[in-house]
Length: 321
Image 1 (cartoon, rainbow, N blue to C red):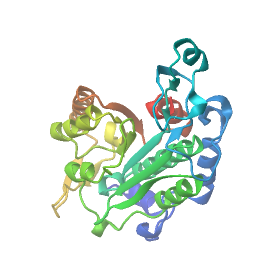
Image 2 (image 1 turned 30 degrees about the horizontal axis):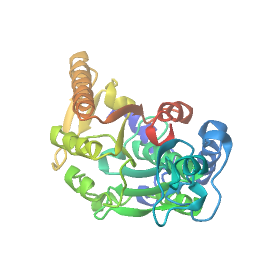
Image 3 (image 1 turned 45 degrees about the horizontal axis):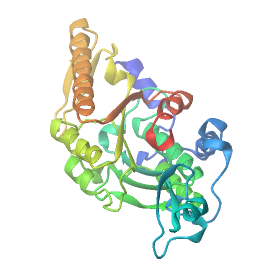
């Protein structure tokens, strides 16, 4: 590493502090995300909030007519269709479509590869920002939210529940420090999918936030099976600008996972940077091909992408659209 780069590294903000003790997001950023989730663009249709401390799984009786059928024991008298009953002499009721409340389940990767960032913030911090915002928006819509956070020896989990207090508890947990690196474990796609609660109803939305270093064709197929089961799956692939295009930094040490020895690479050589960039583009193409082929929605974001941009890009998700 060149001397000027070493000086910048020693003078970086937070140098000398234990990274494991530093929260991913400061209180001011948490408050900004909460305000963003309350803006009109993030409100529920019609601008009305769901009332009550414990919302029902369904939104009332719905307004969309579904069918007209004969009255059965246990049916509500309020649903009686009196005109049809008078015309036929047989009690009939009107059935309306029951609109399920939004159900969002977050899978947030905070593993070792996510604790990297050269501009603005770490990839893990961007994942936490997106997850917190989406949880608060879903809660404001009267929906339920659950989460699994990967990156430690044991994953942290929040059950699927409704209410703003639950969403705020989840937000504080996501904004806290990452698990220590020595306790971190590689993401196992099979284990990720096995962690999903079996109680997730059809129509639930699953949001996976990761750099997808672990993804292969079999992992994408496993996510596709969730889509086939009636769940919506959106994957947000978060990368750093230095991962998309290698900057010229001179001779820099690289270390492969599981190996102690460092490999010194001269990033000033154009051929080295071109080979790196080509590999990064090929990897991005593989991820997109695997996921789109499995019916999974994919969104590529940078760790430096401002919130105003990804809020608009995520607004088209089924759970909020």
